Length: 154
Image 1 (cartoon, rainbow, N blue to C red):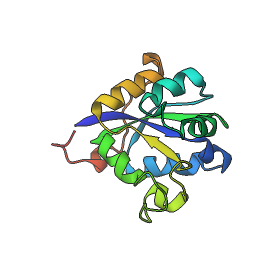
Image 2 (image 1 turned 120 degrees about the horizontal axis):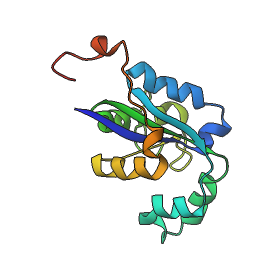
Image 3 (image 1 turned 90 degrees about the vertical axis):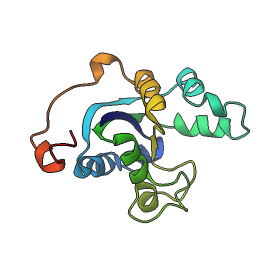
């Protein structure tokens, strides 16, 4: 089933000049970029996005980290995109992520871990709405679609 999911390239990715490299990993996999924008996060969107963490002692540091530079928000689409992106990202802590995953190859931290990826269909829907207006997500076909999937997969 085709799904859309949210990926945030975190400030550590921006600071390390890895934006293009990380986006290309998703594109080489065969995922379609349906939306893309750079934005500066503020208190309001971070309190909403991390509502489940606001009362945790590490939240102020997380908020400061996520406001250090703009982030790059991606709407990514593909068959089972949510699970695929989560597998590609690897475990939250980069030190525990296997080589070959984004965090395993680019991160040594649980917080400075390169990407945020939605963890399920409901979360993806809410997070996409939080970071993108409807008109900022685009529908278009990839000419490579037939070489990416079997005809019964899409």
